[in-house]
Image 1 (cartoon, rainbow, N blue to C red):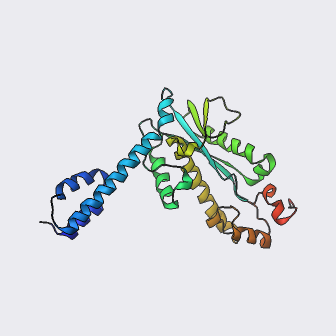
Image 2 (cartoon, helix red, strand yellow):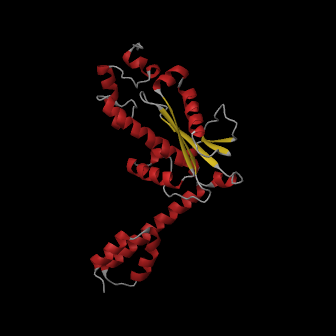
Image 3 (tube, helix red, strand yellow):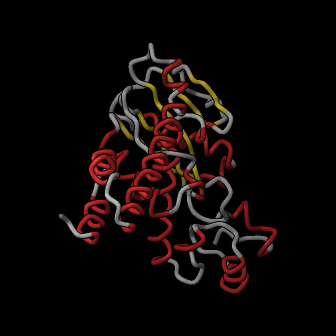
Length: 257
């Protein structure tokens, strides 16, 4: 007979699909430690089943537009920061793809986003990114820059989408049929995947910018107007990736020099 410690190790190492087998194997074991392990595994299995159900509900729009061979989710990140680019992600998933824990990227921890980024990269049929610089944002304004980033993300895909599922917006300048979905990153698995890809891509860029332009804490604030960032901006002035059109009220008139 296995010891409680050995059984505990089996449960800790178990993949999700092995949980029920372990529960069935040890549910009659009368030892207190084993009973706790079985009950914990049951709760884990219940959480897993709840997540599977949630992910299935995220496929509502993908099923609704299932006549299209390639459904593309589109989302952006970085409309609000004082510094850095706006980034759009475009993702085409296989029709039967069910990646657990996909959600609006803001509802996920950084570690979970990184994990999902790699899984989406591996399983997606195509992933595209669009990056629009701070200078371009200043030139055409943030809304038009967001549309430009989305168009660039679509054009960078290796597969042409049949339809676009967008987070809230209708993208001008594209002939591909599109469906704007309010809070789409929490309602569509494709848009949620695009949200995660765009967020991780931009966050990695901001970590690199932190090395290039130290003092603004870009690695932690990602260009948003945190207290530390605002204080640094007033003390150091703007750096090359600050959006001049966003910071005039903070540092006064900003020269292009």
